[in-house]
Length: 341
Image 1: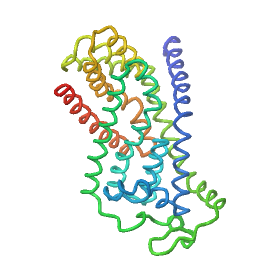
Image 2: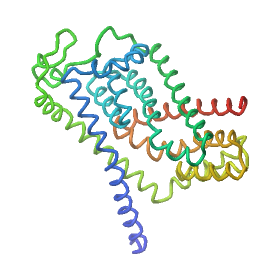
Image 3: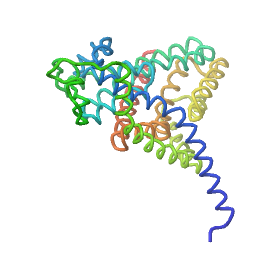
Image 4: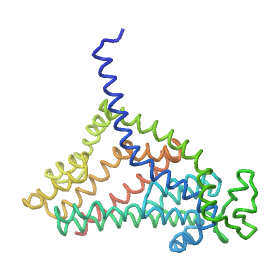
């Protein structure tokens, strides 16, 4: 029989994990639900082309449909909602697997640009001009990544001849297809109230599926955090920094990055003000530390959230492709700064 102390510890871990996962879900699920509903509403109203007109140069060059363009615009407001829209279109066979991957990777750039809301208010006071340079390089990495993916999309995807490569939502459910968008017919849009009701009905089973998957993944990750799995991963990963051309003082910045970006910028600001590190050394250290900590971040947050939206296999593959490509470009830019600054 299991000792009472062990049972009490297991109970504590489960209760704390449940509380932690609930906190994460309260933040992550609402934009996911919003994205799934918006995806359905856009199809019902045949509004993808009107919403995506700003992204036309990107979608046209990348051979992406207007449905993907609509999710690109949503990514400026919520990455989770944009991913949910793509997942909804993919599950409804509006977009194919290759387009899903290209569109999801392209959507990472709007999400990157919106980081200014949380980064700049911390970076500028703590690091001054050096912080501004670092932020600009992060934007450059995101731009280069998006450009690479756009070229890949142009090579891998067939060009779109017109509007979104879509399948009528009514046709998918055995309803009267004349109410909805068809490739060979002009759309007959229902009133907004009716369209909202249709969207809610269509999104409900997807919301339930995503909620169940996301809840399970978040709870599993919370348990792993409680038992110290990620702390162990952090310890092993931190050894990588010893093989990189970084100043000794910079190691404390990378150690702080495992805690969070505010802690890292605070440490970097102190070292910069004390003259222990130059602006160049701070920027390079932060960029390389960004790469080192990205693996822990992917396991801790990105894979669970993407697996909940896209499913375990596709969600994990998307995170691996996106994080891997970003890390390679980040290292190249960091070494470029070391060589030419």
